[in-house]
Amino acid sequence: MEERAEYRIEDLAHLSGASVRTIRAYQDRGLLPKPERRGRANVYGDEHLARLRQIADLLERGYTLASIRELLEAWDAGRGLGGVLGLVAEVHGPWTDEQADRITRADLDAAFGGTPDEDAVREAVELGVLERVPGRDDEFVVPSPQELAVAVELYAAGVPLTAISGHLRELRGQVEHIAGRFLEFTTEHVFARYLDRRPPTDADAAEAAALVRRLRPLAQQTVDAELARAMRTLATRHLQRQLAAPGPPQGPAREGEDRLMALPSGTVEAVTRLVGAAHASAFVTAAVEREVQTRRLDALAPRITATGHTGPEVGQSD
Image 1: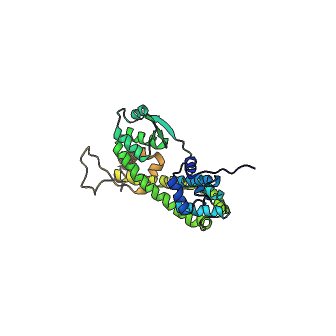
Image 2: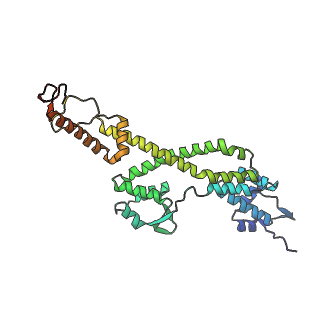
Image 3: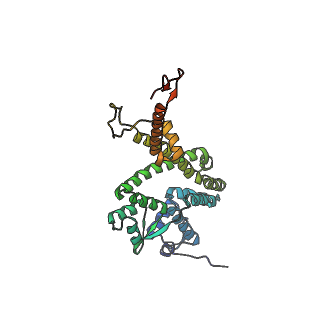
């Protein structure tokens, strides 16, 4: 018969990575089974070591000690933790297909003008756009290469780094609000029926995990679609403002003087769909010039009137 492993509290602390003080605190909170008393010493076994490792794993996943106690009580009652841990793993899994990359400091400096900027690097690290590699000062982890690529393009277009980081901070707050609302919405209408018991049963947690897998892409798809719609609408309005005069016309324009004219939003949107935002202004200008030229030609063309005279028709306007 195999002998049962026995540990003193110091041995248990060494094997589990928890301090003696932490182990005693867990005992006081009811997170650890009571040790076996041998004379004046407490003796711990493998079940205590396994429980400490479980607690460490749940803490790393973001659980509080109070919620861990509920989960462990469920475990002890025979309800199991498999489904719950599967749900936790699903939620903590990647929410994007994008893969992290690395970039050297030399390549980073080259992408942003070739001049090192320590303040900009510190801010990028603070924002999580870059992550330092332990023991390496010349290399960074890039969690989202797409996000860094956007920053590079904006900088190349003339946007200062301080403005880019400020925009990212503002955008991040707004996106986190959207994510919070999406979670509240789905919890209220979808997940509440699975998570009304604390902790949920193994079967309920497993079904909720499957739903997370199905619903995970919906958040990004919804935001992508709504962002495209908003950009189309707002870009049209922005173009209209650029084409419109700041106020009512103040008399005829002097020769050679440009004047902005207000156009119906429907017209601007139709032109934008037809030729694209970049060419809309030139298209409108060319169309107006063509119409003016046509009217001038019509006015100059000889017409045979009803009386047989050659000239402009009665009622013909320039």
